Amino acid sequence: MNSYSTGRRSQRSRGGSRRRGNGPARRQREQTKEPKKTFWQRIAAFFGNGTTKAEASPARNDAQPSRSARKPERIEVSSPRLYVGNLSFDATESDLFELFNGVGHVQNAEVVSYRHNQRSKGFAFVQMQTIEEAKRAVEELHDKEFLGRRLVVSGAKSGEHRAPR
Image (cartoon, rainbow, N blue to C red):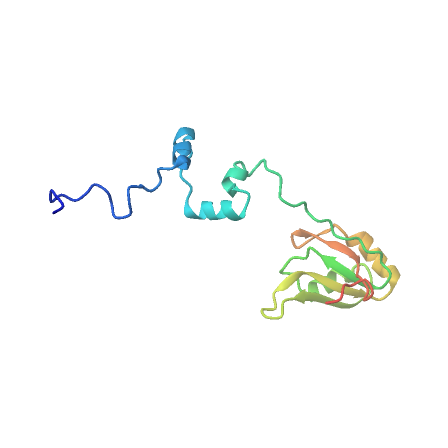
């Protein structure tokens, strides 16, 4: 027996009768008028909590920051060595030498910088002559404006306080 063929191709595609995207998820999206998620939104939803940054905080101005500003740790001045933080990246060792010389005799001023490009890390250490001068420098220069930034001046941590690397 021969099978009968009209010469027309069947309406069905090669993959079968299922059409892509005609599932309950699509119907639900159409009912809620939710836009279709992009590939990256679906990846983020898979690994995250399902919300993108735009959905999580639509108004950036009135949203609270994700982490609070960290207050610098106040270290008691127990040695003539001082930590100077929130330093302008343009500040040099001679600038610090001049600034701290107004308070007392400075032995050494060292701006900490990156090895590979010698750019300042934004903090420094100043060695004063005596502990009394160091304490006076902290009182006078802490929270003082210097090169456009408010300095943080406190006692430097000694070797015992530092965490091992």
